[in-house]
Image 1 (cartoon, rainbow, N blue to C red):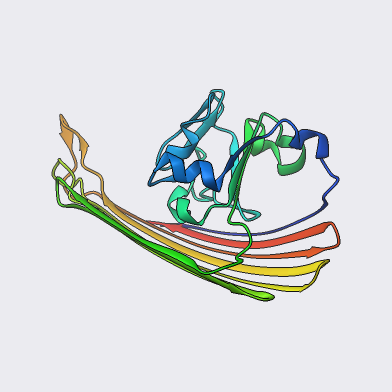
Image 2: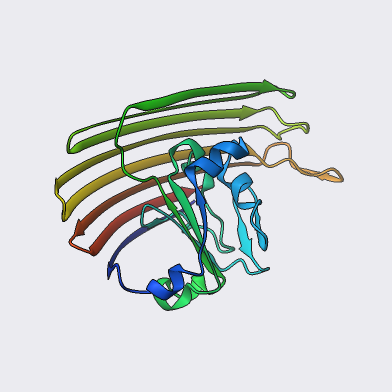
Length: 247
């Protein structure tokens, strides 16, 4: 069993790295809707030079890419090869995605030398929600629900997801559960607070290679992530707490 706890804080002004923002590739909520995709990795694969899967992403061949959701990293801290918890994010909750290719090391550390992907859920301003589901071969099923409501200075949102497949090999099954919530409060035009929390549990069998099957090998991972974002007249403070466990 491997467990990791990560606590961090970012503090910066809007003017910092303003020039780099002009070089960003930005994908908006409207563009994501037109793609009709189910996963964030499907969105990223539309960008030239970016390759993404369920748990990985590379930019121009480099896997040293940091992925942040509302200011907090969702890279798996228990992974030694840059695994990313994309299942924490539902495309329906994304306001925009910003991709910076090869310009993240100075601000976000050496593990971001290949680039940075910033995922923002935006501000909750009205009432909206959706429910999605589908079924497929190998006992595959997927369910997702999202609901957000904003009124005046307050906004609140919740989301949940469940995915299961039996796999096409012995011990090739997989089950994922996701829940998340967000609360926002705007005190005045220059001050706002946002708190978000997300939980992901992934259980799967490790079937092995056809010539060397492993019918009893299992893997279970969990991740809990919290973030508090405060904006004060052009200065952003982002405090986050991530806890991950793999066994």
